[in-house]
Length: 360
Image 1: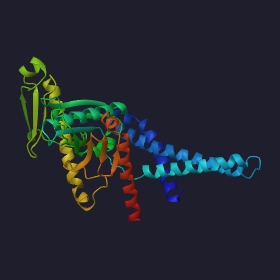
Image 2: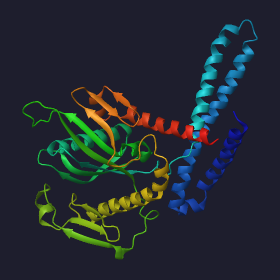
Image 3: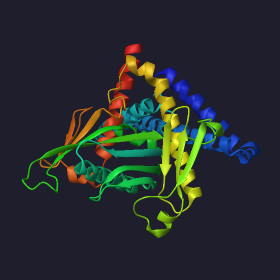
Image 4: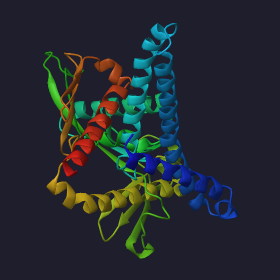
């Protein structure tokens, strides 16, 4: 291990001790914001140092095996152990180096996912419904909590638009590469002649805003309208003014929610979506200059960018950013997205490593 890396890990060990002490302090007990930040730092430090402990154990195992190799009675056993210990050593070192790469500070946040039907009419709306189910099943596999904040259903059972809030461990870091255009090729249920149609939906994954820290909004900049909900929901929903629409006047950004019977809850949900959209715009503006010079390997996250095609006749799904094709479409639609999401994360890591090597 390079001395510079060893020194950095030693400093992280000292910092972990400081964080442990801070977590037990009265300040952390009084300040939930501080407590949350310390817990996040503790988890990140512990993850890296856990692999560092495994690396040092592999070092000890390798040294012990090399000593045994000098003993004629133990030589055969030692020669089997040496490559295993060396492989473990290399794997742990690679993991540590990856964990120490620059992190997106948003990766640990919860996310709000917006799915909208695009070109293709009713078939696009049906595909939007398929994408919603795919993501909900994926979240269920990972033990994440989901809530549909808003949904506009189509006549055939799909969705014109759906907004889903997702809470869990590193949600945004796992889902951020889903932003973009999703294309489907299949024979629609309404197609009498069996012709394959191409339709599209857009997916936007946004890191959820912290209402206190991230976005400062003046009440004077908001227009809040209440109205009667439309569509399904029963007599109560349709006969009372429970739906809420919030407009941010300076930007023109609008968020609306009418799915709950309570006007108060609809207002809270709409405000959460509005703040997340405002924060998303701020983040995009912040990174626009950098993105103009260097586009990420896994895509810009532009919602107009076609990122993936789901071909039902051939049973395949293709991610165009990393040229990955899987012939297991049904499993993917059932929420088994790990192979896709992991490949996208690895592509980002490889790009970061290449950029650091180029800079060095």
